[in-house]
Every structure is written in C-alpha cells, then in structure tokens.
Image 1 (cartoon, rainbow, N blue to C red):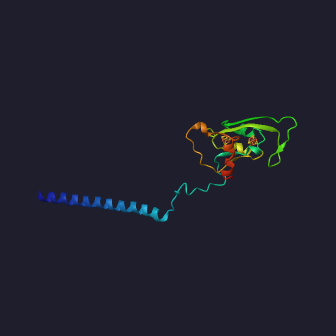
Image 2: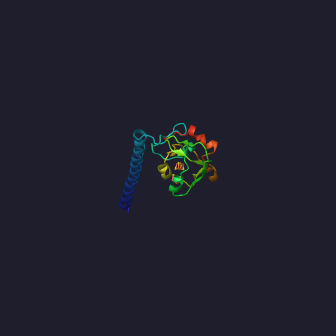
Image 3: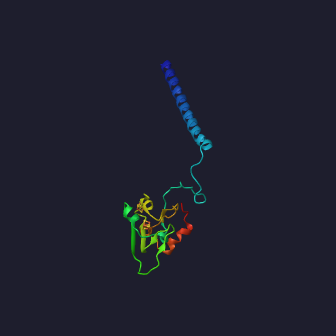
Length: 171
Ligand code: SF4
Ligand code: SF4
C-alpha cells in the first residue's frame, strides 16, 4: 500500500514541475516576442494631429473643382459610376466676353451649379481622369468628417468651398 502511495506522489510531483516548467517557458517565449517588438520594430502609430501622414503622391482624397477653369462640359458627370456630380449651365449671353481656362480652352458656358455628393462618391477618380481642363482633382485633404450626411454635398460655387483652395495641398 505504501509503495503505491509513493508511486502516486512521485507522479504528481513530476506533473507539478512539468506544469511549472510549461508556465515559465511560455511566459519567457511570450515576453521575448514582446521585447523583440519593443526594441526592434519601429512604431507604426503617429501622434496625430501634431504629426500627419505623408500621403502617396496619387492618393485620392477630397475632390476639389477649381470652378474658374471649368468649361461645364459634363464629362466628369457622365464618367461618374454613381451619378453623384450635379452640373447646371447655360449659354453665355450674346456678345459676352469669352474667357479662357488656364490651359487655354474657351469657356463658352456659364456654370450655374457644380455639386458633388461626397457621401455617395467612391473615390474612383474617373471624373478627374476625363476632365479636359484638369480643374477637377483629388486633393490630399482627408480631414472633412461631418456629423450629418447632408453636409457632405459640396457646392463648389459657394465661397466657403472656393476658400478650400487656400488650405488644400494640391497634388
Ligand atoms: S471619384 Fe467620386 S465623383 Fe468622381 S467619378 Fe468616382 S464616384 Fe464619381
Ligand atoms: S470634366 Fe472638368 S471641365 Fe468638364 S464639367 Fe467636369 S470639372 Fe468641369
């Protein structure tokens, strides 16, 4: 009987030390992985907003239309896969001075509305690709969160939106 007890005790002592070893070794392995990241891997987070990401050159952020160079051709609206660009224009009155865009194209129509509903926009960039005067561009401005969805519809003829030009870093 006492020999049987001794065998059981020896087995449980072995199990105890095996479990203890497993606990210690897994802790050491876990801490080694943690310390390796602490010492060897550079942090991926930044102190936003004091520090800002430098975006890739071709990043597509908020759209901006420099309406002074828009010829109301509607190519952007036709290319848009979600129909979120709304343009209204009319012929210039007879005898009006024909202005030119910065790349020399004649502006023959009076632009009365240029609105983009950015809540619908999927940032595909097709509208900017087809724009013949390159007045419609994706800026690098990504700080335009809004509380309500209706405020995400931008009227590019509105003075406050035109004022973006001064703030937006153009690509
Ligand atoms: S970027 Fe937006 S507005 Fe331009 S075509 Fe794509 S979905 Fe339409
Ligand atoms: S494609 Fe360019 S020029 Fe034509 S309506 Fe759109 S923004 Fe204006």
